[in-house]
Image 1 (cartoon, rainbow, N blue to C red):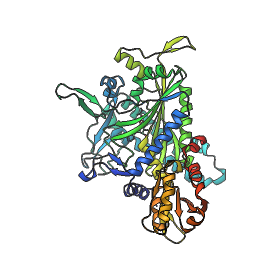
Image 2: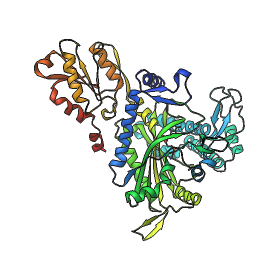
Image 3: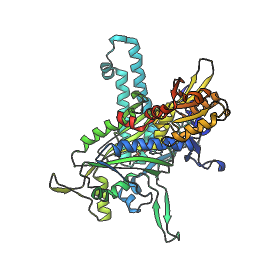
Image 4: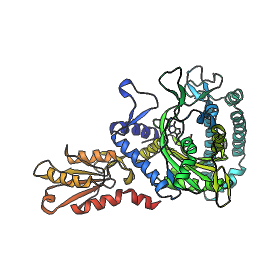
Length: 512
Ligand code: GAP
């Protein structure tokens, strides 16, 4: 299966097996908004719990918060979102398609970078063992030419973006002869700015009510509560505040399923540090967060850092952790050294001090902040696309199996009587009613045992327990493992321990 087929399969599998539905489907859906089905909700909860426990429970100096979605509108003025949370948009006059102008240029740069990699790959094959890759990259004339071109384009693009000079930004697109992927023409409109925040109003009468924004990031709820949390938890710097919750962005190019949504969930942590120490902490959080992603077991080669050269208005260093989705390497998480920009700005706009008295330094200061910010839905997509496998079996048939890390699986164990007759259902229900107290289990007696195994494989259930006639004689059951399909006979008394140990989040946290 190629990547395009895999991605299509992920989308159809999500719908067919109750992971993700398009929102408002019976009204023909709502673009870039999705609902999570029963198994999707479980999987999402489990991913969120793994993040929360890894961040809050395992760090004595990180505490949680759950701030409201509605916030005072001045907060978004202070954060810079009213003035600077804009996308530069450009339309192709022939296809009538709208694009982010910066994305068109980034895609062009990406293609140039791919050209370099292709040159290196070709040379690797040609020179075999004698190949000195570093030397080749730094001296080959063709690569040097492409690199120089990238640097020039990048310089022009960066300057135009920093100065919000949309005339120059459009000129870069024209000069590079970038064509619309749909119409294939270079017939572009001017570049215009578009604010990504959704707005609504508070109060009974619309004319007299206050304009509010739906938060475009959860981070600001943490900043404005910084002193409340610090004082009530008696935290000392360095310390962090973590929060998960919905964020909203009126994305223009909302596509690729749940990769870019208009309503999504973020899991963010702001780490407050002494001024001057932020870049040390930034490096530490980069490594820690990468290690957390690696712990999911999908392979280290699936992740890479992408350092930002164009920094947001609040940052003095920033990078993405990228994941190799079926449509290529894309941002999964952002790590940002946000300086003291947000707290200082909130001090200015609110007129309240947001300072910390540091007993070590015997002085007060506005802390610097290092932020880790991952999208829960994007993480969900990475887990799903990496786990879904179509497997050819020895008998020539195929099975769809979701090889989820067991501690993330929606259902940990399915309890299946071989038949409904001869008292097997009653025995199976007895086992199910005990197991369900400690883990999410399913009881299923419909259809052949083979079909029931397949259903559980497709939703990623790590273990199936089958109750047969021997069970009534000696209190043993068979336990089938999802990935190997191997079946072992074990005592009923052992089941909870075996399944618990393999699917328990504690074992996953211990590995971190
Ligand atoms: N507080 C910093 C911040 O919001 P960001 O890089 O804009 O930074 C952080 O967003 C993460 O949120 C991204 O890495 C991505 O995982 C997720 N995210 C952002 N926009 C999204 C969208 N439209 N749909 C789904 N996830 C999104």
